[in-house]
Length: 607
Image 1 (cartoon, one colour):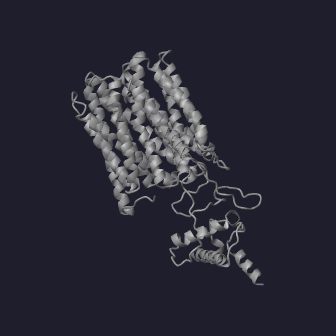
Image 2 (tube, helix red, strand yellow):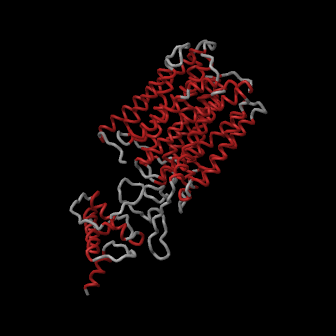
Image 3 (spheres, rainbow, N blue to C red):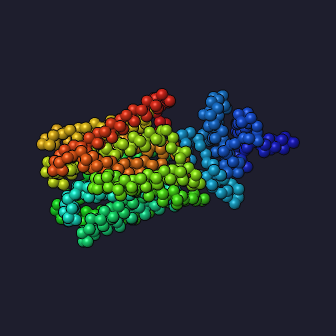
């Protein structure tokens, strides 16, 4: 009779039906029953009725040990009840986070967070038992290779920017052009597609699997890099611009999916902050490496070899990705989310048209009808994109994710990286056209950015775990502004160590603080199924703002410089534009920091 009563009590409580392969003592069983009863009563009293109880733990999908852990964690952290009975040591084992976790790991700041099988669409096993929690145990060497192959995608992205910027005059000679507006398309065309297609590629990664899209991105980048080199034979600048634009789709596929792989592999914490900081540190190193090899091939051999060698390296990385990235991170959701084809088409069209209008304005002028007509059509497309996304079932850009915090972060990233794009393009023009430096000499002058980028990455990783993210963002905006002011006010004939060196040293801190800070905060605010979207938003703003800012600076250069022969004054006007953008970033960063302090105080991210 007593046995029947005990079983009925257990059946009325949400104790799992799966009994672990061990024998519980009477004391342990009574602890489980009391914990479960208190959990049920507390939840029922909070919700007001037992039928409205919404526990995420389903009886047939979770083991008894996990149930005990979850109740203990809820009691201590949610109910703040220190009087709970202590548990045997057997049930207080911490789950290891020293390995790369599979995509079924539920991201949470709480130390005991079991799986919710139904919420994650994990079907029950045929026997009705829970699906076992899978961990992908990786050796230290493989984890290093995994981080490397993902982080190198950022290096390759910036290297493709530098390989065309450093020898831009040599490349322009083969295409018989000296127009600065046409030459700027060598850079703007690449940044245009990188920034435009990133948002879509992140969603594709969520649907098709981030590992597959990531490896395909390397392959695409390699193929079109080779085509860019072959464009020297027809000697048509438009064909080269087209190849550069197609080349930019490769990094658009790589960047958000690389960050999504990091977001899925690491829970929020110091390890995740470190890998994101390493990812950001690859940006200055990649640009310098690309500029150096582009200059070497252009000066000492033939510039197409820079693109061909780059394409071969990209294809090799594509093959390596299949073997290095864990198979568990390539799993696709059992129920694939839909893809918003209408919103994607309208959004891409709007971004492309707006960008084309801004970058054609220096060539044709805003008084030309087709320039402002293209801009109007592009803006209408963007308005239509917002209207579609608010009503779409599976939106590319969920509007509910765009709260005030995300808005401040993206605005800071946009103006900061836009000013950076102007700084890097016109600093190169200043060194080569005003001071007469060769591409290889200019590349050497940017080499301190590699070491400073690593230092900035380490500093950022420390600050993200000891200061509020809003403070890190504000400091990065200050670094952008100070570095650009120093470069924009340097005399035409001055020793390199006077101001240019100082500017090169400071700018990586703006890059490597803003990018990880923005990525971490958006990644932590997005659910697991939208990790691709979180990474896409940051990368879209970073690369698209560079292309737009170059168009704005070119327009200012054309309209403010009354004497086209006065190249120095035209460069100065472009720098003044960058200073204005970076100063706006400082103001936005300060507002974001003050808002965070008023709302949360000096709150440091959990790690």
